[in-house]
Image 1 (spheres, each protein chain N blue to C red):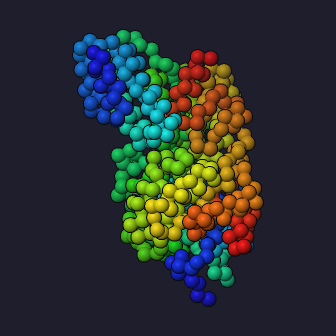
Image 2 (image 1 turned 135 degrees about the horizontal axis):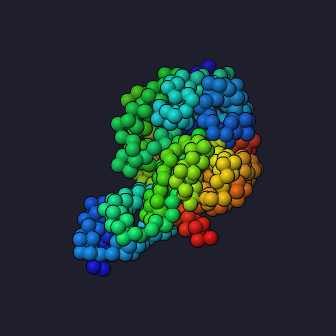
Image 3 (image 1 turned 45 degrees about the vertical axis):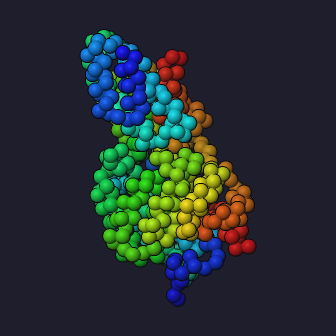
Length: 212
Length: 293
């Protein structure tokens, strides 16, 4: 069994989608505990992917293919997780803010969060503040994650936070922000709860926000 | 007056002055947050012209058109969708107006599509090529002196741009990359790989623009120098950005601090020098003085 776990781990690390799917299915067929596959296989692999990304060993392509392999495996695992009543790490409403069409970073964040068992509601790019508000309202999300690549669109993060306040939802959710031009200082100044400089650290930020 | 062409100038011994930033300078002149600079080409042409004139006055030998994102893909969801051709032509006209009566050249700026190419992203290579070809045709028809494919991070997309351009024009082309993860692009591309892969593709110069810190950019230029014999185009940011809550960014290097690095850049091999984000006309003026000293 530990062999299969190791195979799942390394197939995700290397971004081998088909092999990940096969190994996950094989492990499940042999009666493996879905939560063990999730935690010790998939999440462990994605954590390592994130670490290598932070260290400059992995770049966007490696991260993308690993995340896709993980998603494929997760697709197979999901029904078993539901049956075994394994809870998600939390619910995240994510999107690139209004006026900004850049979704590469946001997609990576979504994939990395999914790889850590968060449930993702991805609103896409150019997301109006009001759509964030509605999504939080409808899904009872734990976290709002906003992305911006442009210094010109970053202020819409603040606008969105204000919209959450106006709707009386600000205290119900944690807000985290990220994107190339952002800094911790900026996040603090606009009243966000958390900041992550990249997709890998977004996972750590999301976890720490919900642990707080 | 007949101007010396870009290729002729590259054979001259001197170092040439490029322009400064478009985005950050237009923002300090009132470009609304969230609005792409290309919108101003049609709506506030005087502001675009004003900045171009300031760069010429600061000593630029070559200025870029305000067309970085003027492609069908990038403008698709903006208020100026479908007006790419008009924007490209108008931006060239404004740049030409700014250089009228001088021997300053106009370079047509071509930025990335903002999407990842298949299989990593949704964009098919053929669509990328088509998109770049259209922009190159607009810019070339409007009369630019050269084209600059800039802020590239993916070898496949840069190659698609070069392919698209060559379907429409024989103008000289510069291909410039942003090493924004230090000395690698976000795709992990190394300067040496850029040198090896882009040099044989018929470009007139290879470049580095934007990126992160001046230190990292300089290191990247050293690596690029080792891997190509082509002239190097160099437009680093004026240091690192500092932001206020309204998204106004200031870059941490003064004109003097930036200019003090110029001789180092030239000794590594920069042939064409300007600045990216944060480089104001004052920064450029200091750079130009240093180059011509």
